[in-house]
Length: 224
Image (cartoon, rainbow, N blue to C red; front, side):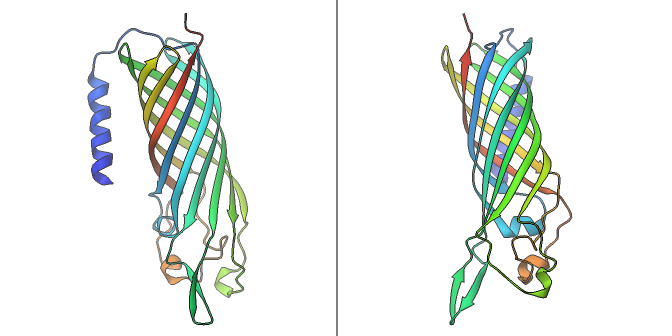
C-alpha cells in the first residue's frame, strides 16, 4: 500500500509540473467515484474496522475559469475485523457488525488540463456525515458501559484528486485518490467492542479517517 501511495503522489507531482493547457471544462458536470476505503487514523479504529466500499456522486457547475462547485452524496461501508468473535457452546462465531457512513457534502474544485483529452481535478468535499452501527451484538460487560450511541453525526473533510481521461465529448473516466477525516473520535463502546483487549489497549489519539483509491467518471454537459 505504501508503494502505491508513493507512486500516486509522484504522479501528482509530475502532473503538477506539466504545462497547463488553456482549455475549459463543460459548464455542468456530474461526477461519481467508487473505491475501497482503508482506515489509517487511530490504531483502535484501524484495527477494529476495515473498508468494504465507498461511492459518491455530485452535480457541479463551473463558476469561472475551471473552478467549479457542487453538491453531492457519499456512502461508505466498513466491516468489523475478523478477529472479533464470541464463543457459543465452545464454537467461535464471528461478529457481523457494520458501520455505514452517509454524507451530504459541498464540493469546491479546479480542473487543470495538460492536453485536449486529459485533466487533473483537485477538489475539497466538506459536509455532514451520518453514521450508523448495524448488527451490533448485545453485551452487558461493564467495560462497554455507558453504552455509546449507535447513530451519530459529525462534520467531515475530504480532499480529493482525480486523473481524468476524456473518451467522448460528454464523458470522461478517471482514477481517484481521496483522504476522509470525520471530525470525531472512534468510541469502541458504541459497537460494544471495548471488552476485547486488542481493541481497548490500542491507541485512539486521532479522528476517524481513511484513505480511498478507486475509479470514477464525469458526465460533461453543456458543451457546444
